[in-house]
Image (cartoon, rainbow, N blue to C red):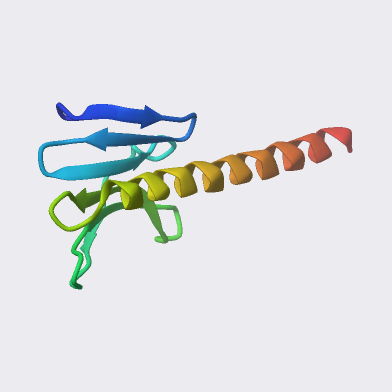
Length: 104
């Protein structure tokens, strides 16, 4: 879904991009859904996060923009790794649930 962004790293569940001004972490499982809300932090380190919504109106992460001038690459890389781990755990949980349902 990149708009001229360069892929730095990609997993089954997430992508870490390099753009001129941002490190961008994107969730591959939600990136094709419409962005319904964009939030911004207003702290010493500002970042922007895009969200979509589920059927109940709960916000679901789509992508985060880490400004290069304020946030080190290692922090964006850590966010990419954490997203990958979280989605992998969720996927494994759903696989176990589906297997359990098939056994019945």
